[in-house]
Length: 381
Ligand code: PLP
Image (cartoon, rainbow, N blue to C red):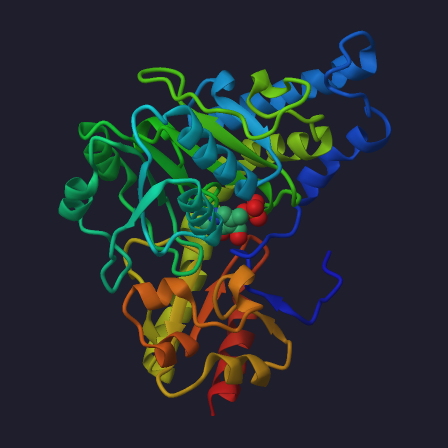
């Protein structure tokens, strides 16, 4: 049930509500089974630990990997920091060079920027107007001292999907690791790490109907094993990779999200895709909107578009708070700066400032879509 029944919520790439089944699964771990998962001496601790094991199995099943390859974190930002800094420290003898894209999330870009101050070298490859890097350019830029290529599976602003398995072939042929921020992909499209060919993958529960402040990191153990220097020390939790008392309710919730992800994935790829496509058809034909990103290779729930000549801020203010959507990523919209993703794709500042992101989720309906269309017509007049 929503506390704001009059608002049409279309900002699911920023965050999602917690699903009823997920909330139900985590509740007992606040008040009844509140033991520390590391307290193996008594049943409260053991029950908590069993629940963590079960959640780890569910996340591993969703990613098609082994349970021992899953480490729980406080979210994708922590996962990205742990992976990139951990690789930088552990692989120092091989080199200090990273390759990435200017369209990555700030969690990646700011971490790489910090690593540069510690002596890392970073190459950000250019992308085309849809947001794709050229594979030849990727191949040419991976050097013997390149330790990792960092690329997201799905872009949070445009929804663009990168061909991870093709990218993985190039990265591995050149002897580097592939780190994938899959925060927006998980639960919306398949994230089978074997099929994707990635070595490290990061995800977050709050983008898939779980609570904020919990996530997971996949580190490949089979084939070439990925090893990282831990970021957090103290207590040796999570096989020493991530110390800190486990957030049992959050982890249980993430496990439940993983269990339900297959069912949700079907819905994203049928009903939600139809809502998005229907809306796009209307925006294009009735309001002359232009899409940013790719029409074909994108998340089924995401639409990033602009109506030439109409500022996004004007549309937002004319929606009078009736529709919750975004002008860019949630983190950067506070700064009122044009989106770094759209600028990297070659849009002008003006075009970026005309751009809006609509991201649908499980609770959206066809009735809301009709209201949205009316609201857009009013707002663009
Ligand atoms: N990466 C992407 C693509 C995201 O969309 C986000 C969330 O905005 C993050 C990373 C950061 O995730 P978290 O909020 O779990 O730290």
